[in-house]
Length: 350
Image 1 (spheres, rainbow, N blue to C red):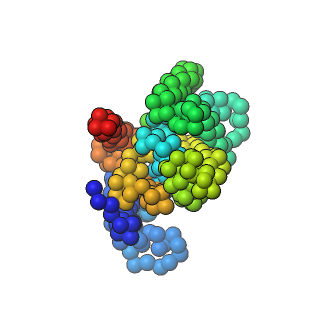
Image 2: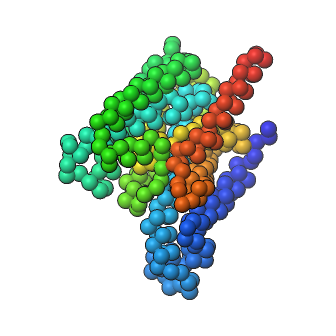
Image 3: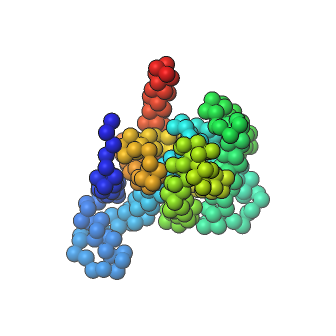
């Protein structure tokens, strides 16, 4: 497949994302036309507008749909760029926060926080609670990623079989610990735990967006600056060292920022799988493997995917809402099987 020039791919993705944002904020039980959306936004910014809209439309757009769209953009970007960074770090296209247990580790700590938080920190609520939950899930994601990296690194080389097996073991262990806390949870806590398990953007507010912003925006800005290191790592660690790359420093930064992305995303939306696996593959096929372009365009495509998935999740079976994690799994799981089959055929040819 011939790569698409970055100068063409980038504006196409921006246009598609813009279209999906307009559709996502406009489609639903309360219809909001693009002109009405502009009128509401103009009013919120203190600009006079001739747009005609109802108070209900204004409240739905500003308090329900816009926070969901912004959260989808931030989380989709964070998960996609973290997946692309992990694949570059591990030098393997199957690396994904969900597959190797990082999302499960973050979710496990979130469930522990839900069950124990009210007892240990009864006065913590609102923004403080969200920041503390993001910090807790970051620690879970960070610890899990360190364990997987250490277990799968044999003589300086990451063994994919060991990495996947370690991910299976960690997913099982995290699931068992989650089950223990679920067993001891009350009804309200059980509803929250179900939310984390399936993944959802329902109930997202501007408070969630504000809490999510620094934990996702900082990695999305910094990770592309490590593209030179990731390009060098693709040639092997010894070659990267000869090229003057500080490999250990790059690894530490990538691991911390990736864990930050996953932890914050799980804190707000629960487990949303396969975004970090699927998106880098699509972008790599589209524009090539150069991380200078792969990382930022993965973030852009991840935002596009999650905004689209969120629109499907709340409109496909309206008024009921499908958890967004189910939508991404339905897309990602067959794609993962396709990658496995393709790699199997390639290994046979070799």
